[in-house]
Image (tube, rainbow, N blue to C red; front, side, top):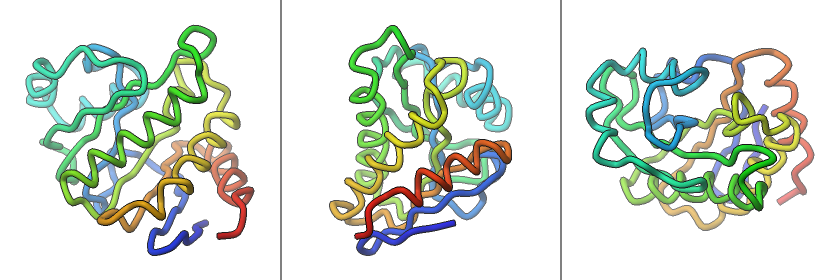
Length: 178
């Protein structure tokens, strides 16, 4: 499913964030130290290879809502944008910190003149943010930012399983008509 806001397409896809060959960058739902971990961060680090951890070391630590960018190494993309989402119930205000992640990731994409970026559902895994609420924040923020983007023309939310993809489609469909 996809929607168009100005010249930007926002779409959802079920799949593996590390296998989005047609995107200039993918976003890592990172931890503060930018180290390999579980979930999205673990998958991205495994596919990218050990060079990624070396590239991340001087950029860490980052704070909730911040985003940094590295080469993608073994991934099929040019870059990985690393965002630290809020831990649900601990980092406040959760919704604003989560929205800041998406804004900051798009800012890094714009700075590097990238035309496409893929996001996971940031904070919805180990950080405990309820998936539906996290996707509503994500879609609202992406839609709000789309008219301001100069370079990015495609934003893709990539959800690993069917249930997550269904939630993402609902969140995209709930956006007001542009």
